[in-house]
Image (tube, helix red, strand yellow):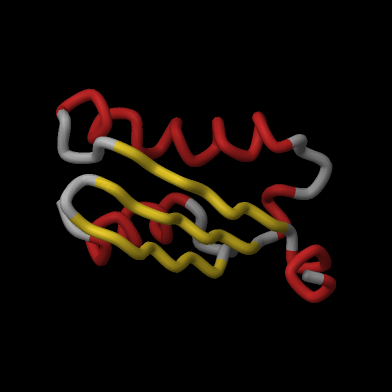
Length: 78
């Protein structure tokens, strides 16, 4: 599984988010910006992504995921 496949998977599940996936060899950085994260703490935000990727993590296709998850408003202030 490569970064573009992960981007497609996350985009299909979170169509209102702007998603960028970088990396390779099973180690990826996921940056996602969208109001789907509004009102969620950091753990809940990560759970949203892990729920989508968990099958690929279990299979070993993805080994490590670092995440930057923000609402639209948070992305404008960072």
